Image (cartoon, rainbow, N blue to C red; front, top):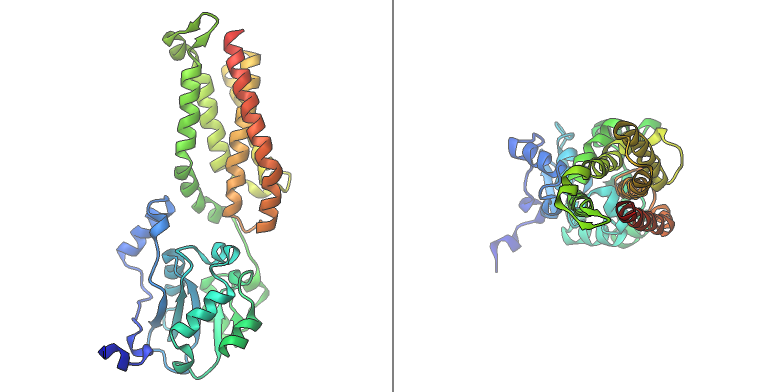
Length: 337
């Protein structure tokens, strides 16, 4: 028999520090840039913060390392258990929407670590942003543990516990200020670069067309305007739209992005004084690019719901594809007429 089988699970639970080291901070920078994001996870299981005992609180976390690190750095001076469930390396809010941070997974995790034999109380603190995926009653029915939903932000955990597990209205309020939106821009910016390169390459090649056929000299002479427009539409959809999200009219992200695509088109036409027909063609492409990229931000925003996103995509994607096709056809015609 393995000697570990004779030891209680609590004795085998690793102790984790509340202080983030340089590798943790560098890892956070890399994942913010989209580098290694799909593999930035910690091993699911039970962890110790400080010196917890049978009366200590149990906090539940996703196994996305960035979420794990944000939580543990806010637990300084506390003695608590940290139950990390397998969310496939996805953060709390997104995994709750996808179902990986869900009732069944939480129940299985509680049983897997034999939590009932480790703590005498029957209370676990689950992040509020997991509420869409976790049903408290089935968890209690199947494990005996009562689910208490904690505050939105990890930095409020201490005050929440000190207040007798009561959250103030501010602790329950989900905010998404410009600073937090800005943190998400580098991931989308890098992730969508291949799409941008395809558009730029297409413009570069098609700029060589004219009535006589294809001339390389035309590329050097006429490709600047469409390529700069593509870069501008990309910047509008990836950077400008998320930063100014609350102030642009329309509820649908796709329409917010389309507005910025139109603004970018007007600005570029003012700067370059391009032919009207070509400007109209590029305008359609700009609308498609900026609308699509801004719509992608629904996956990062706390303003949206899964059902709302699905509903928006049903009409937005056909609109974006149609605008792209019309723009491409008109652009080719502008070269041949």
